[in-house]
Image 1 (cartoon, helix red, strand yellow):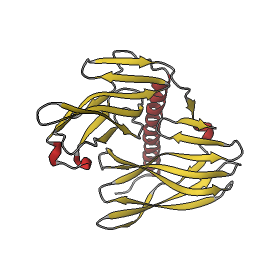
Image 2 (image 1 turned 180 degrees about the vertical axis):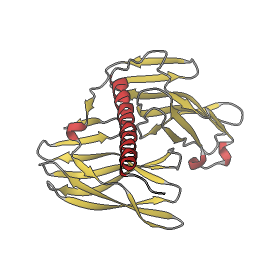
Image 3 (image 1 turned 45 degrees about the horizontal axis):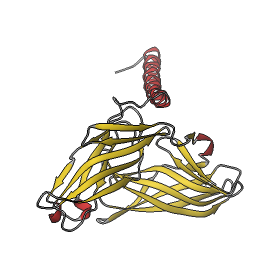
Length: 273
């Protein structure tokens, strides 16, 4: 079938318009989320940001600590970070033998899923989640599941945008080798600043195919990286992970004598001098 030059140009033009429309929608979605986060006001209605799959896990004495898990989801329209969950350890007679906390070293954006594990005593029979807490944009929230109440403290910490401090150029993670037990990935790291950067460490999340986070690792990358210097880093992960994602990184600003800790999910930074 012969296609005229005019028809061909029309097809190309339509394809370009569709492509641009898709890009605009993606940019619009990110901009909408950014605007929502920056203007969010935490109150009693939206403070219960985390959905917990199972608030009570029974027969934990038959499980090891790595198997005592539940899934959580950020159901809010803002990010949550510094997440912790309070839980009771209960014996076979129904008595509370311990009150404990577990922490999630991960920022969850709206719709993000993650596994949470609950270390427990050998003689505990069940684990019951009774509270959880998180921070967002300098606001701290504690939700009491027993009382169905939320305690909100605003402006508990200063929050800064991390964009001016995001000086590492990171390549896409690509798989180099795979075995039955583990996989090896590679990533390139370049110092795009005009400063020496020391003690570089990457924060990398391991995910399942559906996007659920299962593990977060902090991996030292390099001692000192000179301006414009580039290195290649090898990352080994278990066979349980289907993909990896760089969640953030930290480095020492040698000139300013400060440690910069960047969260690439919320694009917020902590500066320690």
